[in-house]
Image (tube, rainbow, N blue to C red; front, side):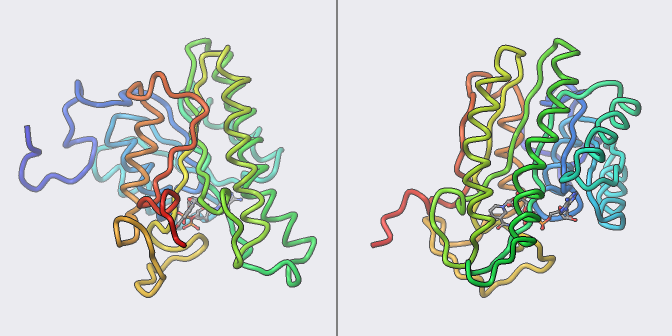
Amino acid sequence: MPPPRGWRYGAANRRTNEMKLKDQVAIVTGAGRNIGEEIAKLFAAEGAKVAVVDMDKPRGERVCTTIKGQGGEAELFIADVSRGEEVTALIARVVARFGRIDILVNNVAISDNKHIFDLSEQDWDRVLAVTLKSQFLMGKHAAQQMAKQSTGGRIVNIGSTSGFVGRSRALAYSAAKGGVANLTRAMAAQLAPHKIRVNAIVPNKIGSPVGKDEFDPTRPVANMAKRPGEPKEAAKAVLFLASEDSSFVYGANLFVDGGVSAMDLS
Ligand SMILES: NC(=O)c1ccc[n+]([C@@H]2O[C@H](COP(=O)([O-])OP(=O)(O)OC[C@H]3O[C@@H](n4cnc5c(N)ncnc54)[C@H](O)[C@@H]3O)[C@@H](O)[C@H]2O)c1
């Protein structure tokens, strides 16, 4: 049946029995804008209780206010997910607030946008810590909680096509995202016995560039769709991997890139 007129995605607009994540507790990191924001909003519309995690308070507050305004459930947790002690405290705070964790989306990343000659050791360490180490830290501590619950869980890592090709404009980010692709496979193999499914999406050119607020209409796009992706399109792929719709999918890197990775660019 088509949605009623004036439908926006919000929990109040969805029938309870149609919701894919009803009453599940989901953590979305970097949910303050762009792709993470849309994941948080879509999950809430699908009935999840969403832990909106970001370092930036105003951004996170805006997303939580929007979700609540649409009849969903969300709470803001401020943390730097690249730091082990903040991650353990964050997981404890989420469990204290919502009682459990069913889904983790590792969405946070930063890019260096640098040539190797201009990249400092500090740049390298920070990009690797935020973009790769955070997924290990969040994955480890969330999975330990999921394993304790013994009802399983789902983890979705956000990768990038930069992890599958050499890029002239980013080095540490490309290395970190290459790590995300295989971290996903290794986590999937290790956590499957605990009924935790781990997968990743691999976006390209979606919404604003990583680390930026503004959509850049001049950003070059060469893909099969002949347009940039919308954050909602990434969110829908993440929902698939976070829900029972993907019950036989383990350790996958799902390309959400307008087909660019499948193109012959010669
Ligand atoms: N935007 C794209 O075109 C694109 C393309 C390929 C992959 N991706 C991937 O998608 C994901 C989201 O990208 P985006 O463009 O939406 O990012 P973004 O920069 O727009 O948003 C990231 C959010 O994470 C928060 N954040 C950054 N570091 C943090 C930390 N250490 N702890 C907690 N919060 C932190 C920021 O405050 C921000 O709100 C990333 O993993 C990125 O690599 C994006």
